[in-house]
Image (tube, rainbow, N blue to C red; front, side):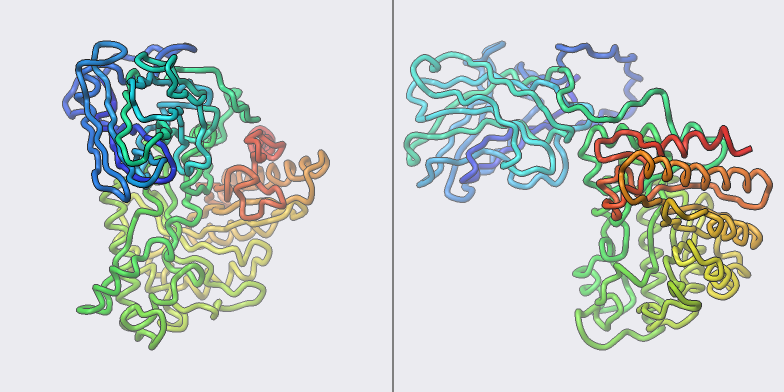
Length: 560
């Protein structure tokens, strides 16, 4: 049974390519469970489109009258490489000698991570008829999230006599870690005012040897499996990482918690235009979009990885317009009552939307982020929530989140101000969170743990103990341990720092002094970190496990 049910085509100028796209078909409910698949071997077919039945399941939607061009694509039954069936293209691009048939905007991948992988061979058959009006054809394979300039190109097939009136094999190895985005054929024409004609058949993806090597090796090692009985082990990630097959594998094998690094923050999900339309009748209504983080949450759901939703109420990365009358870019600030209602609606709409679409996926929520003044003692007053609502903005946020969260979800306060200064943790617990704790509206506190390899981690441990003493859960939410240099001594120092932190948490949990149920590393590979120049994470830029990885992994055997 074929997984794809559609090709999408559009006629557009200038880039000279024809993209052949496949769409995923989720199958029908009630079908019997498929038999266990036999692993493919090198040279086996992964996907193919070559028969009449294939093409009948792949209806062509050819967008006509596009800019400076018209054309059509049809399924024909009088010419084909396999069974007299193929795809025939007839295109005309006005005054342009080059044009392309394809989709000019790929918002979703047409192929899945199980289709073409690093090293697979992508091929098809092309047929150039006599008097085709072509100069040449060329196979093109486009990684998802890349533009035509990043395409992987096959050999040029010239439209000369020896190549006419016969099927010609075109193949290119998919030598990238990216997800496959499109398969296409670039064409050039002789006379831009006349129609160019060519045929395509037997589109095929064949399993091949990996061509792009990384430093990642599974070796039967897994962080989350090692600590499954102790706490979740998590990572922060961006949506772009999902287009990388090796990154997906690394995450699946080592982490059972994911935080969207930026994609679920207020500036990304608050929908300005929709909010402004709502304000015409009600200043307190709020509209959001899940588009920035939905691919991350889909990936987590598919792979049974829990999600920490980060974050709602924060002084940073929250747009200025959200605090203004009519959601205007400039102008008068909204009143306290309006902002409280906006806060409630923002939290309510987001949780209702997320929990309906991804039930039981989000297990923890950072309701308020960084309300403590860093480097001092007191509230962070560089905060529009503090300006418009007042000191109780934290309490109100937890009141609303507690009302709209599901029973399986825990809601957290999260901060870095006490990574080195335990008095800031004390202030958060005894002042900022006092009422929320008294009303049982807050479940836990997150310690970010942005630290350095020279730190002894005692402040973090003391914070965790204070949090536990208040009857709250604790998570270490944004761990990165920086190091100056990448020499052996520096990396070993970093390994010891990671190991010491994990050992201290394991021991304190065992002794009942702390209740840390998740340790989340803020990033995956060093080159994806916001502190990339200081190599703070567990994997290097070539995906190899660093000594720090083994410091984290081995801590469980050494903490007693």
